Length: 233
Image (cartoon, rainbow, N blue to C red; front, side, top):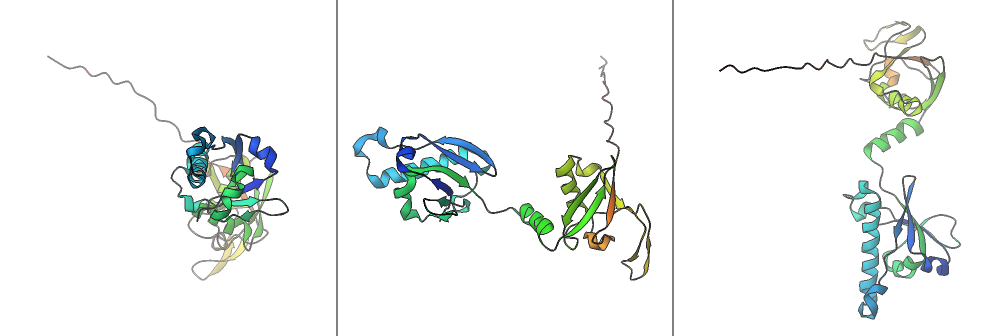
């Protein structure tokens, strides 16, 4: 069963409004409301409802091309109706009674693997880690040290300041006593680089630590050479 998230208001205003506001991941676009009146009275009610819902789904996909290949069953449909404080799921048999009064739709899709991973990284068993930036500023992150690796932290930094992951190098800011992977203990020196091959906790990053981020040089573009080819006779 496909599902959508909707907001319903008074019937008078909604019935006279030719558009439905569709919101997906924070972006909103007005789409035309499908109308069977152009076909006259010869269209049966059941056919009209199918036409309306088919038209709505087509309009949603046209408004958000990223949903073009998404199956209807993967679209989450909920409705905010009068006297309901939260969005509620709408069963298919109810749609014929509310379609003409719906004025706003919020379309949701199941989270991707990347979104699920980011949720685990930023919401589950998190610890505070600070990162000193090249400009002297310090950013703080709540991150799951047992799950996240250095690349995950770099992605969070990229979201905050726009520096591409590929140009970031993370290292320890202070020397610290650590248990090494080979079973021995010793000091991890200041400037020890934190690689992307394991969880941060296994790369000597502990709760409350301060790290340092530096930038690598931009890769130099290879010069373009003009080659002249002469053919002999």
